[in-house]
Length: 208
Image 1 (cartoon, one colour):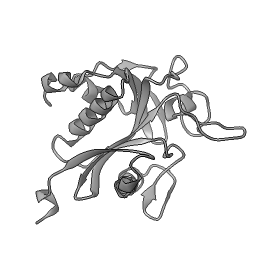
Image 2 (cartoon, one colour):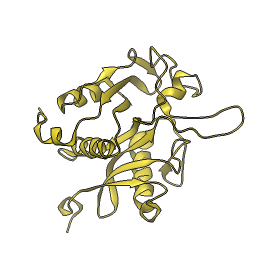
Image 3 (cartoon, one colour):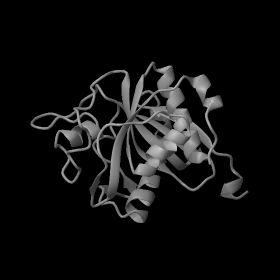
């Protein structure tokens, strides 16, 4: 059986609750290295074939698409009211920390106003997917369903303009948080979407 014959499963791995499934997280780290470092040449920290950073902490949820345990896509979810670190720098989540000037190389003008610190607001970053038809949409649907089950009201995204257009096509209602900005890695836009009721997923417009 070839890899393409293995069905894609999408699982939400919540740390530290699901440490027994950390093999999936490690596979997602390897996929991130392949996509962001090897293919897109982003200057991200990596070691031993995986890409990870300070936001990959043990209070994180990962939406991971995989074939037989090998990640083919995924995303990282973090609650915006959590913080970590000690001393002079205390991190929270990527969009807010960039806005506060805590991330060298990241534009500070991602947002017009200070991003939220709210238990019902989450951030989705490190979105990655191999070119499998419908995979990106499925990952976002599972992420939305997970957030809805948690009682979340808002999800913040950081990505290229095409990411916002895809969110609109899938029935989300994206609201830009600031202007389009750029750095050495490309052009980025921070935007927010209201978490949709799960039943809305079956009525969203299809791709195209």
